[in-house]
Length: 312
Image 1 (cartoon, rainbow, N blue to C red):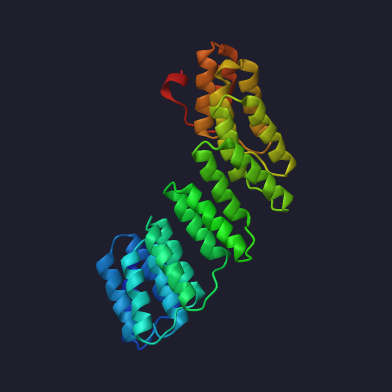
Image 2 (image 1 turned 180 degrees about the vertical axis):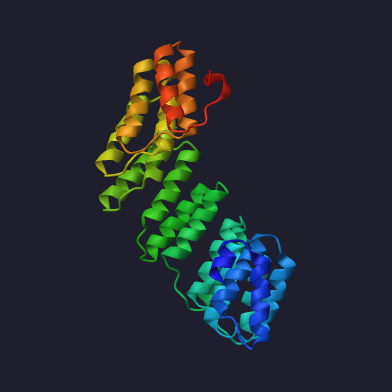
């Protein structure tokens, strides 16, 4: 069953589940949910609804655990109306939502951009005598940052600390990325230092955000300083790290860009097609013919797809 679902052979899976039923066998809730999520993601909502109805007939949605799973399934499929309907239904049937239920719905609404609905659920969570956790707050902080309400995200961050909940790497990474997106370099750098003081290791994701913004400001010195800090933290730069530098190095001469190409390979981050084309483009603009040919040949040997203008 799992193999058929993962292989996107949904028709065969539905037929198999029907064959099981005719033999008097019933699928478990996990198997049904795999199929249900796959159908909805594939746009087969009518068939998905039929499977859901069958789950109800088979009595599989009869506990808080089962409702949590079905709500999570709908959230993953970005079908928040269905998720909310099941949230209401579980309460009508006498099942009390727990923290997992609320966190799942809050996260789903935040990813859907419906922050007001997420905040309403947070209020309901509190009225039900439940205490929000790091998952609750990280979802709302991420939701606020997604719609460019960064300062409100920080208010939520402060509220989280008042609840006695310590921020983790996920929360810090979300805020650093959001601050970089609005150009607040000073605050994002301070947040990175705060992470480190608290013994929380920043991720490549956070460093890249800062490196990219320094590069956009043409402040290569600070970008390189951040690059060194990242390496000392035991993190390896990726193609996003290098492409940020390469974009800014067009006036720095052929040596810098050529060194960057070979540095990627030495650091275990083979340049991808995008980075190769970017380096070659910069070298061509500077008439660095030999370097261009050498790097283009290396890229071809690795099976990279080069732009037609560089392929001659």
